[in-house]
Length: 194
Image 1 (cartoon, rainbow, N blue to C red):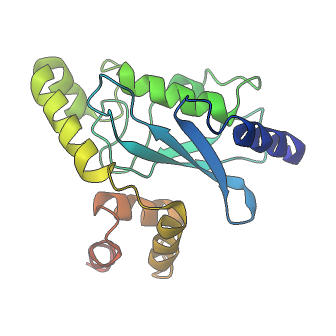
Image 2 (image 1 turned 135 degrees about the vertical axis):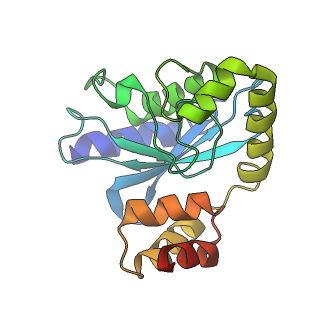
């Protein structure tokens, strides 16, 4: 598994400026924890946004899919507006060992172009997408402006996650609270502490 991960990382570095709009890097020294970056596709409400995705690579990789969640808040039927959880078949039952972290990020970028409202992660967003497409596009574009324009650096996100984890909460919960509060560590801490 480690050899495969190292090879994938090397491939990413080779293709850094290939114009695909996806990149990834290891967080610290943990080869099984990456953060991916994808640029919002042209002619979508996500255009111009820079979205980061937390990628946890399981011990069973590549025979099991990576666990991916959006760090950047995004208004999309297949991505939870609260936690960043993603509903995408290749991250569940349609995973294949031939896939790579790169193909996952490219698939997430494609998902931003073509939402699947009939298989939603966020029912509220899916309903708006189906019943009020203009309102959906407006809100998705507003969220892109608000949350995906400045794009916290990956190490800044990590520092904030660790700070919240010091309160005794698990990583996923800490990250979800930070995402919910626009990466404001004080607001996330207040929310957790009640």
